Amino acid sequence: MSIERIASINGNEVTLEIKGNFDATIYDDFKMAFSDTLGTVKTYEVDLSGVTYMDSTALGFLIMLRDHAGSIHANIKVCNPSEYARNKLKKALFHKIFEITP
Image (cartoon, rainbow, N blue to C red):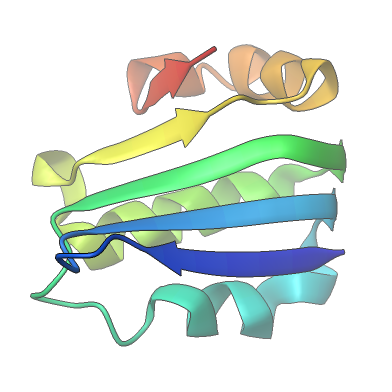
């Protein structure tokens, strides 16, 4: 598992690229990846293309990011979810909360 944080040149957008297992074992890394962005980042992208396993904890992490970013006013995109991740997101109805792009 790994999380890579990629910031845009202007600093208004951050991409969190997650690979491997997206579960409770990465709590500290996930939180640290965005904790210092409050007030500076306008758009968050969470790239799930490399996710091979995802549990309900990961869904909670996405809600935690949403709360950090401004709740219903947050601009968060879940990008390129693997087939496994896409199925989990769909079953949890997360397409109603987040923009999910192919």
